[in-house]
Length: 211
Image 1 (cartoon, rainbow, N blue to C red):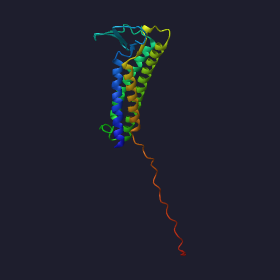
Image 2 (image 1 turned 90 degrees about the vertical axis):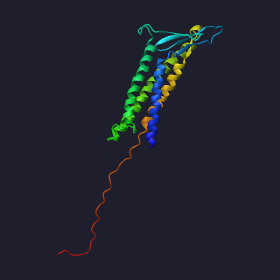
Image 3 (image 1 turned 120 degrees about the vertical axis):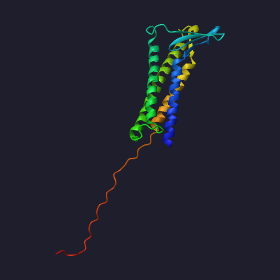
Image 4 (image 1 turned 90 degrees about the horizontal axis):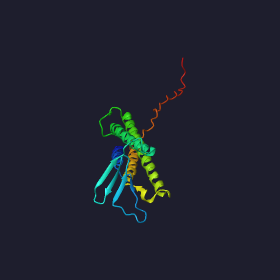
């Protein structure tokens, strides 16, 4: 029963993390314009994401522009896109695989060994999805931080971490944690030893003479 509860907890955490990865990928607030310089007065906030850039006016109106050409984008941005999309696809497959291996499901009840392996395999896939999202968000965040502290970057073109980046970090952590719980939820099989065979006792000598 305890392993079943841990399995369910792992699946819920991994599923919530997968939803967070989707939200992070779709949001345009991966980085936002910094106003750390002196005498910078602006009436709009600038955001950039994986798919579009947006400008929010002081009145609350938001205008977004999708990137024109995929080939004109930086290679690092294309790689970040690919990693996030791969994390979403692998996470979707992990959901189906883990559901088949969960104890609360009726699938494959006749073979508990294969059912446990499916749950562990689903956990491994969640871990792979979480690692892909974590690498993508950390790589993007490292680029933003390096450009911010670069003395050759103009003050009015510096960016800081956006909310979508923090959501991506949290989602990747949840997915990794849930996948680890799924991998650890299966009880260890005890080592079975063959039953000891009783050896026949030696016939005690009765001292009788055989004719």
